[in-house]
Length: 300
Image (cartoon, rainbow, N blue to C red; front, side, top):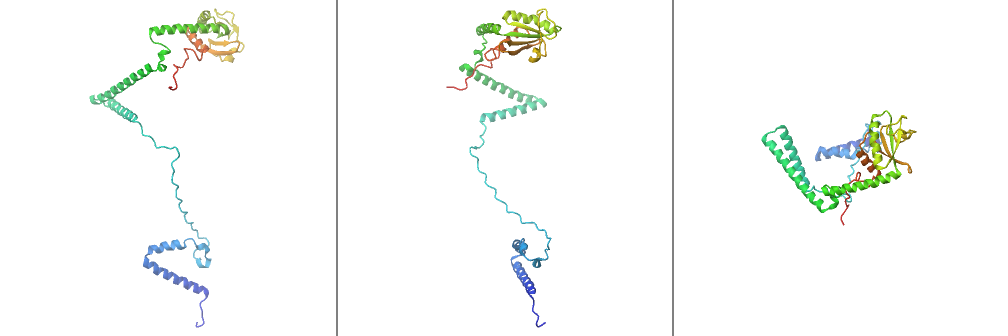
């Protein structure tokens, strides 16, 4: 025993024990919580660099989670170019929303509890709404008077004198249109000899032809004729090509240009035929299909 000298491993073990005792004394003075924190921060994940014999209690198959990655600071949002804060609603819009909500509430209350006070409250709202609409109508009428482009009576008068002039102009336009069509167009008339509607419509179509000068090109689908058209042309696929699946059917056609447009299906009166032929013949300038009075897009 006198010649015994501790080996290197024993010295290292004693050194670790001594270091542990000193660390315990220091942590006792400053408190247990800092010791725990220090032990975690100092050697939580540095065991990979130590030899196995110095840390054999951990073992080869000790599973430890890696330290959490530090949270990256989120970049501050920068306002986009051209973005502006939402504008507040105009006072008139807020007034309308309040009035609408109040009237709806008064209506519902009066509907399910029709007492004198509840019904009177709803009638007050309704009367106020009528007054507002009347004021708007009067203001709009003054705007129309001051701006003829908004006045539809310029296109279609309502007074007796204006209507007389308008009707005369329309009759002249009809006459010119029918004279032009009589020179270049025909009316294809598809029918069946056993169709009662075709029998009823044939005299009307014949009268229209005699009044306007537009010739009729009768086409029978079953080979038979009608009293007004006793020698019709047989169908050689024209009806199928035009999609004439219903009789009687009338098409306005220009044989020179091969342009064909549907005019009527079923029984029509002579006045209806006039309106339809006018609309088909003048799709952009006719009084019957004109969209509205032209309105200026802006003021100069």
